[in-house]
Length: 537
Ligand code: PPS
Image (cartoon, rainbow, N blue to C red):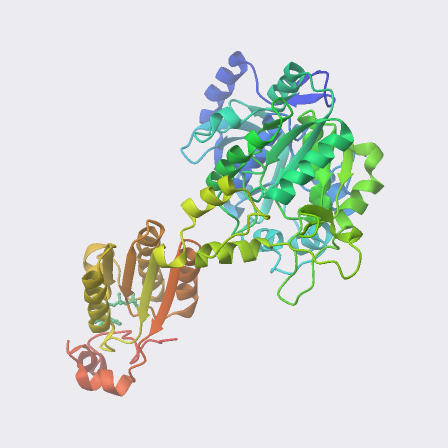
């Protein structure tokens, strides 16, 4: 049964883990049940449901709660809740499972983490959900894109009984349940705790913000970074956590602590800010820092921001008496060279020189090996960032040749490989179309489906090469644009990606016909030959 724990901090906590006896029963009964393999996002949600961070939720939302949350930001019972916490599943599972049945929720290795008692199944209107929760159905918004393109079509709702929390092998000593963190605060003698939520490495401005908030609130500081899923393109959490660890020595001993939050962020701006606050209340915090554009996205491609810069603070203020933690609102801090100090951007007299560096500019400076000014960041943080983000000329990269058979891809690719090997210093791997067809894709033919699989495989191995600082040269036909783009996005996050179209005209390729395949294709003895009877985009 779900237990309720009463502790001195933050109100009643749900404990989603059941007794060993109950676990045994569930394990035994689950042999008869259907299973669902949780996605990385669902694993994050399940962990926060089971450990009480999502209290008072005791399971994945049922439809009445979901509707009320979307439309009114409230659970059906009336309590404030800003964002749906739902279990999305495939059409196939939804068709098989009935209300009243149980489903075994499993991690990627098949370990059963929890039992879901299905109380509701429904097909949501995702466009409506996007508009209500995110305030937009624009798929440029990463939360909306996830919802519309990467979320399963059906939702299952119901109470969960937990057997174990999802396992983590990384930074175990920095992970705490709400109960553990509350106990830690008590041991440290903290009666007031201000939480700092972040998905970025901590620079000087962030440090300043936390110290000022703690002084104003007379509180201990909890550095509480989200390490579940954050915005695509964010710095990986391993690097971030090393940056946080590097900064902790700057706080007066006993005034700050670091703990990792396995939250899958939605980037839902004001609504997500409320979720952050409810979670922090459950972890025993009394205050939370809310800065400019909290949980927002800055500007979209047209220069418009999805949420106003202070919309999150305004939403928080409207619900302040229901949340259970107090807001510490902050304007953006900018550096004033005259004063050699950080000042609130909205308090700077007109004409005063100020400086700030955006996340994008910081990434560019890292990539180009340019200086990162010491007023903006601590040397120990810059050192960590440089360790995992070497300048572009030391990163791995992929050169991906595409073009018709006989266009000269392999010849150019070989010449390039030899030149790079002559220069030395780095491993080079050539993934030529024919080599791949022999060693990686020998069972595949030339249908669109098989060609796409083939190119994805090449993209996968090249991205591994690139990630490890090596050079991959690929030379398949790769006739379809969509999968070429997929490969680009797989690799770009890990190093360089250069697509080269070897634009030799079909007549020239056909005239060369080194392998005699064009003649066979014209004669009809090879079907679906690129350029003759199959497209090249
Ligand atoms: S794809 O579309 O990218 O998966 O094709 P790829 O793996 O690069 O093809 C490798 C070579 O296969 C030979 N071949 C064909 N090409 C196109 N269409 C058909 N139906 C076909 N059947 C065999 C062709 O010689 C490709 O060689 P090169 O010259 O290396 O591009």
